[in-house]
Length: 374
Ligand SMILES: Cc1ncc(COP(=O)(O)O)c(C=O)c1O
Image (cartoon, rainbow, N blue to C red; front, side, top):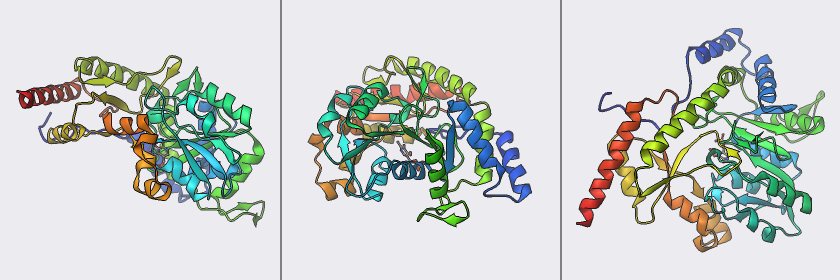
C-alpha cells in the first residue's frame, strides 16, 4: 500500500453494477417520476417486510414528512435524543414544534428510556428515537411509553438500515420509520431517503407531500419537492440486491478490527446491547477520560487515516444553546459521548493490512502518550 493512500472512514459500495444501472436510466431519458423509484420502493418494502415505503430526496426530508404525516403542529412537543445528528431536532423546529431533548442511557448512544416519562407534558405528541450510529434503541419500552401517553413513535433509522432489535428490523417497529441514503450510510443513492408508514392513507399523504402536494389531479397541500430521481433509485436497487451479504461482511470486518483494537487499554470498542444486532454502520470506540481526542484525530490524520467524532450533543450546538439556553450539565452522558467517541474506518473490501496500519498508528500514539508522561 502506498504511503499517501488515505484509509477512508467509509467508501460507498459502488461497482460496475451501479454504474450500469444508472446508465440504463440515463439512456431512457426518464430521470424523475419514472418506474425505477417505484421498483426501489417495492424492493425496500420486501426487504423490510412492510407494505408502504416512500422514497424521498434525503433522510432529513424523510424525517420532515414523517412529522407532517404524524400531524405534528406548531407548539407541539416532540421527544428527541440529545445525542444525535442535528437533523433529528431541526425538522421538529422546522414544523414549528419544540424538540424536548432527553439524555442518552448507560450505552452512551441511545435515548435513556428511564428518563423519557418525566419529559412528557400536555403538549407532547411524539417520540423520535434514533438508532444511534446504527445501534438499536430500546423500542419495546419506547413503544410502551408511547402507548401509555398516546404518542406517535417516529424512528430515526437514518443510520440503521438492516439493524435489528429483537430480530425486528429498525425503522419498522414504531409508527413511522425514516432512513437516509447519504454516502456515509451503508446503502447510498448519493442523497436520498425513505419513509416507512403503516397504512394506505398515510402513504398517499406522504407521496403527495413529496410532490408539491399533488394528488388525484389537483394540488391539495402546500407540499414540497422531495422526490428521489430514477437514477438514484437505480443505484439503490442495485446495492439492495446484495445488501444482506454486505452486512455479513461488515460484521466480520468489525469483529476483526475489534479484536485488534481490544488490546489498547485506553479505548473501548462499543458493543451491541443484548437482543440487538447493529448493522455496523459505524465502528465506534470510547476513549478513556484522560485521552486528548483532538490529538488522537490529528495523529491519525497525519498517518492518512480518516477518523471523526461519533455524533453531536445537539442541545450544545450553537442554535439550540442560544435559542433554549441549554447547559452541558443537563445532558451529561450525551455531552460525554460527544467528547469521547471516535468513529474509525470500516468499509467494503477493507484489507487486513489496512487494519494493521490503524493498529500500528494507535500503538505509536500510545508510545507518544507515554513519552509525554516521562
Ligand atoms: C441520525 C440522523 N438523522 C438524520 C440524518 C439526516 O440524513 P440526510 O443526511 O440523508 O438528510 C442523519 C444523517 O447523517 C443522521 O445521522
